Length: 395
Ligand SMILES: *Cc1c(COP(=O)(O)O)cnc(C)c1O
Image 1: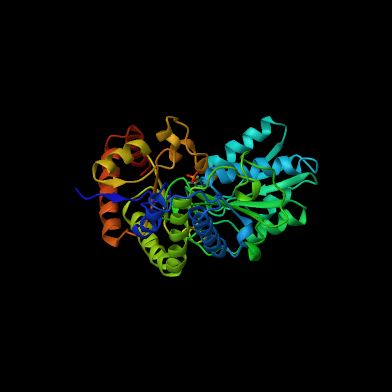
Image 2 (image 1 turned 90 degrees about the horizontal axis):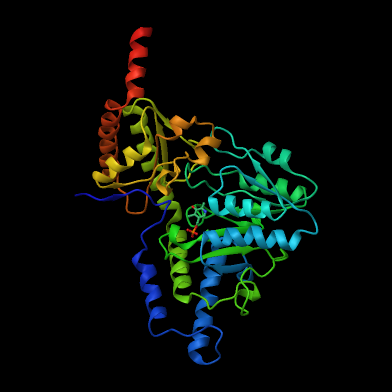
């Protein structure tokens, strides 16, 4: 059976060039970058080169990039270590209601340690308005953390404007750019970003590797204690192979970015148009233009997301629902609730995230499968039956 992977926001398949670049470092080039003999020096030089590649990708200095184990660690570091380094200045942090759990759960952790967190609401498209951020700022705000682009509904935030507001109030600005890094142009200097999180496995690199960018001058406590790796802030022997794969994936993502983004935007809009035209009672979630090139997110009335995912999987389509059902909870997604969807509609949501191997044929197959799936589920839905009865009465 045809297999179509449309969950590239969850993870991506590593590209062969990244694996090829990694191989020597998993085999003969196994040195520890802290050692002084040639095998160690070779590893140190490899790390330095990789650091230059990823730093250049966001217009940062090499010394402003710290390698981590991925997006979650970078988000934890940005919030926790900054909170500790600046707590004499204030104990208030601002973030948004639609952040990834790596931010939200870290914020909750800090709340238990005596920090105050304000969760800025978003509008119906998932945008954090500059006015809403302005209203949340206080004299004791030390940090603002707003994601670059949302992983569920694809909304791209007005980052430069938001950073300006943070700075006007003397706070630092961090962004979880895991969904944007490599996919959208990023210039940390031009956009006023003080800290940024990115992850390799969202850009066709290996899992377990990421980075935290920290502008020169930003204070940070050590996040992992031990050796002197990562300028003494993140101890532990470096994952040289993973970092090399990350750098290779970054280099290629940048070289292909403009062309691939244009291709994906066209496919994305084609998918959105077909769904809106062919599936009644559907609603696009997120912003129509300020949107990641690969993100399609819809709610379908009168159905339940879990059933939709299972039927799609049965037809060979791997997708994800907007809800957290899959993690064992029946709560609908905090992101869909934050944009104002009622519970029952948030439950019937679907996220399709396209990737570098997605073709128009894949999109057509998926939407054909989706149409059948939704018809099936609605035929069994008591909610839909009630709706049809009401409609009949009204006419
Ligand atoms: C995937 C993701 C993360 C987590 O990154 P990992 O490398 O898997 O830890 C954090 N934030 C966003 C927005 C993500 O999409």
